[in-house]
Image 1 (cartoon, helix red, strand yellow):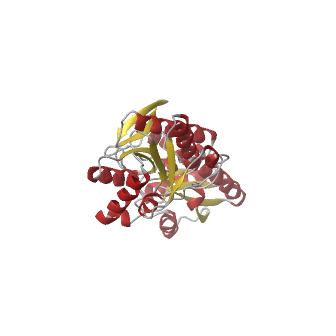
Image 2: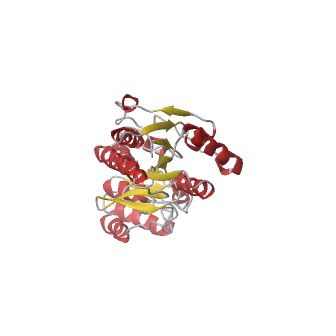
Image 3: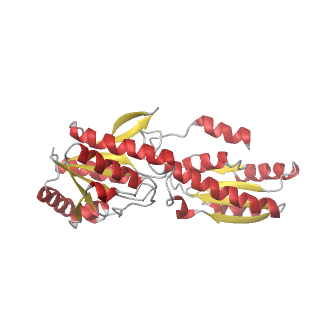
Length: 324
């Protein structure tokens, strides 16, 4: 192998730049040419390929987002789009690609390799949701839960000052990992997640018990994909049923969780994964996601490293029940 490419795809996440840096520096260490592909699969189709050098990735580890930018590509879902992407890869002499993204990114790579098996893809898990099987932490998750924790701490200050009940919505359309860890870390009274049924009556009873125990405020953390419909709908339902002990407020944290400076562990793990991805390509591996399980590098086939395969630890749910 003489030349590889690297791109970021799907939603951005803190730590992607550290991973890009590791891919580029590792490739150069092994005397490989490396090309940055802008805007993910769409950039492959549009031939947005740029040579990467050591100085191309200087001073980027602390930056959120991705210097290669990212996009979701409808064109890549078509046979014609993938053919054009292949032609651009072959024209540039790229033999292997490091794809940094989530399950959609890996599904796209799997389809591409079925049609064009002479190009190898290895993935790095870039998503704040931490919902991919085969790694303890995805790139972006640690920063996202720390960002959410900091925001909820700040909200708690004003909640205490005014005897308020805050419903705080965090990201997690299909998975409640951010809500669970951020909620436990901030002492939330309740945590509502897609993986478990929301019982409004039980929630109101828990909030009433808190009020009777002289709590000056309450925080309920809600994952955006909670089956009850998100923070606004839950808050409206609680209010409709006559809970008036606290003034009710709703705060949607939104995309602040996807940006910001990555944490130290984020940068370290992303660097480990980026380096391992290049070495995996050199060893002839393809169609696998790089992960870190119990501090060791692992390789999980793309078809296994998908959403909904990773289950919540029931001990975390027990923690919520006991500690709230």
